[in-house]
Each structure stands twice: as structure tokens, then as C-alpha cells.
Image (cartoon, rainbow, N blue to C red; front, top):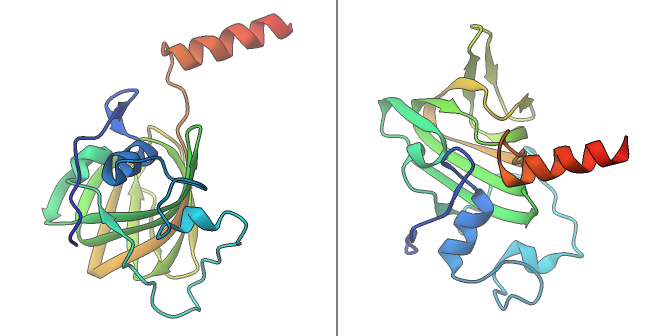
Length: 185
């Protein structure tokens, strides 16, 4: 990958926002009218289909996200690399594709995520010991702050994802939300 990652913004408890990372990588906002004609975001009116039946995922538009520690990860085994393609990002919501290479990580999820595996396999174990091998077509839901072990045994895994960064207690956003909620009652 020819692109490199500039310093990126941290959210809340030091977690990286994929949207912020994407802005930092491209040097300009993503979306319609941004001038970045190679981004899937410029096709806002076009539906994007993520399917494990469509053949290999074209990862030409993926960017390296830096070390896993930047997204709440701690490497347990191997040298896993992480990449993403952002197809949508607005107001704490991010959607797109994510790729991780072989290795094992412990991850404190920096967002709430629904994801579907498109290629490869990943074994996820939660803090209660619940363990599941996810294959193409399988989906999972993980809440922000949950701690999981993410294990890729083959070359890589690719997933589609929909992430929401939830306000953390004590942040300006969460205080505003609480104040607004109190004003309604």
C-alpha cells in the first residue's frame, strides 16, 4: 500500500474513530463533493452490496490503520495487520469493510459494531469464555467497551461493518444527551 497514515484523532477514552482516521489519511473530508472521486462515498446514491457470494473482495481501496493498539487492541500472537475501507461516515456512525491478517488480538471494542464475515474465518471469544468460529455469511454484534479475543488462523479475514461510537459517561456529548433527556420529562 502506497498510502501512509498521518497522526490521527483520539475519541473518548483514547480510542480511534475510523471516520477521523479516514479524514487524516486522505487529508480532506470524505463524501459527496469532497473531490475524492475514487472513494465509494462519492457514490452516495448507489447501493453497496456486501456479499460472501460475490467472489474475492477488491481490497485496492483499503488503507492500513496502523498498529492494532490504535483501535483498542493488544497483540497476543503473531503480527496482525489491520486495514479498512470506509463507505459511510457521519456523526459517530461508520460503515465499510475491514481486513485483518493472521494473528491473535485482545480487543476492547471502541465502538458498538454489527459485522458480517465476507472472506476467511475468525474465532471470537468474549470475556465470559463464549467462543464462536465465524465463517463467510456469519454475523456478530459487540457492544462498545466489551473485551474479546480475535483470532485469525488463515491469511486474512474480511468483514463488512456498521459501527456506532456511543458517548462515554462524563463527556460533553453524554452530558448534553442527559440534559436533553431531563428537559423532556
